[in-house]
Length: 244
Image 1 (tube, one colour):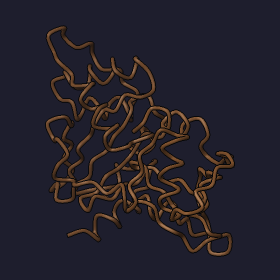
Image 2: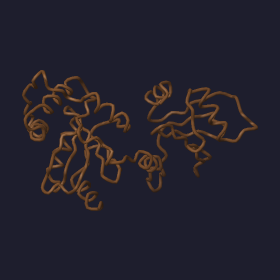
Image 3: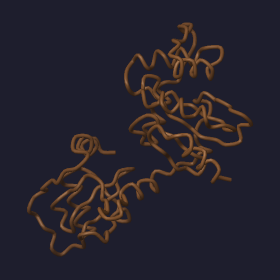
Image 4: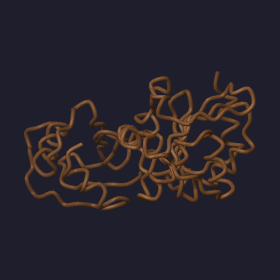
């Protein structure tokens, strides 16, 4: 993604209106106008097929990478945030984001994950987790009540360098799955790893960025859907039972 736009998104989320200017491309279609204005003011090349007129207030939805923004037909104003129906509480933005952030579970590099098998291991999930994230620790508590599942645990160190150190010590231990559990559940610090042990921290971070993971924990199911946050055991079990 263009660095200017990325900086803009990070700075102005969750909600903002931005006045682009007064230039109007009167003879152009709204899609062409939006393309031109986004290129001129944000340095972003938008494909026409990712510009969709919405049924709410004349707004146009614009997909840029794995992000959604909204604008008017003249691309004079930019709205960064979520569109919700106040009456039904339906989050239209979340619904669309779930569709565009679907991943191919089979493509996830399992060699970058710590494999944790519970029961018969039939169900499968991937979890991106930071060892110093309290919500990740809450998820670990919740997962105690999820059985017959294989968990592909990706130590996704986004909070601090201390997280990298802990993850490396877990990865390089004799039993990474148990060592991870001991730390996350029992606060038992893993032993220091040997100097010759290699931990693929950079590759895991690159994978997380490619998947547009903005926070931990994030869970992926085999149908490609994701659930951010510390989902409870009932939610995870229901989802697993719904999958083939």
